Length: 399
Image 1 (cartoon, rainbow, N blue to C red):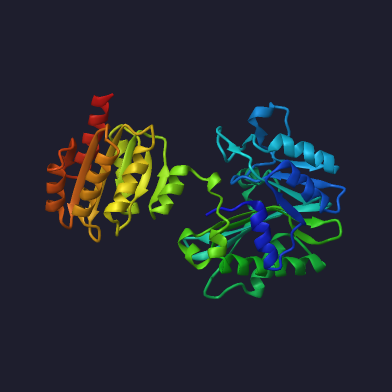
Image 2 (cartoon, helix red, strand yellow):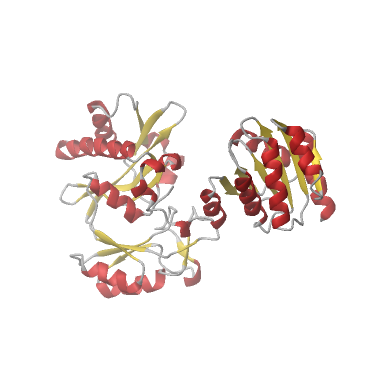
């Protein structure tokens, strides 16, 4: 789960990490009120969307010469003017794609006198089973270019969760940032606090870009992006409450309500599979046969008839879907339960695209019998290769 910058800064502040003063705003008047609470005379008005590259982004409706999604304002009236331009318009960044994202929230913060910008992030390194702290002296909007052109300027420090953040890790962070004196000590303390926050909140990623040294030699988190392990949100109802569903695909939001793993893709063949590995293999074999999957959808190992019905409806709600392939291996999941869900869903939504079903495993004979007696034009398949060939052929024939 992702959250907005202002939410991330609030969380970091609760862990004793220094951030500039700021306030979120959902309207122009709220943005003005936010600025009036700050000392000024310099303000920063930031678009709040779940994507990076906001500073270099462009508002599609405002023309090529318009400012990006992070703007400096010299007065409260400038804050108002920027808020009027930004709210309700679509910001296109390198991470949003051409469609962009509509700006529904702003974050108005106090201006900062910056002396130096750094980059610092933390993420789960699944290869080593450790937490990786990535540090660079080259922070700011061009960090992606640094990663490509000067990777030697990026240092990775790995931390064993069983051991935790040790003093030598802090020294490594300060050394990588080339800081001395009091700033060196600040960097060590900051690294420890960030690690503790990362672990306490079950983060998947915590990025600070930039981390700045101010003119009065203080380390300050100027921007942050955070995401959390969705499987751990049951332990953090306060974090789950921060979710902004307007930033997510409506189908993915609906899928999450039914505990379904769903991601929309660009193809035309809908997939419903149990198990992530089998789902990936199913998508691969669809492509091998000359078509493209319209989604990744894993119903899990313990799906009910209601869950399968919901999954079917979500797939069919995508107008790009021209056919559906159901591929189920019944271990914990029973094939007859899947079959009942398919029949119920197909009747409820008045199925009008080809449907190929491959069932194997527990209660497979009963499942196939349910499908055969449903009165629906369901095409059975013997194995995965057979299923992929059949659905691709059925879609081409129907076109």
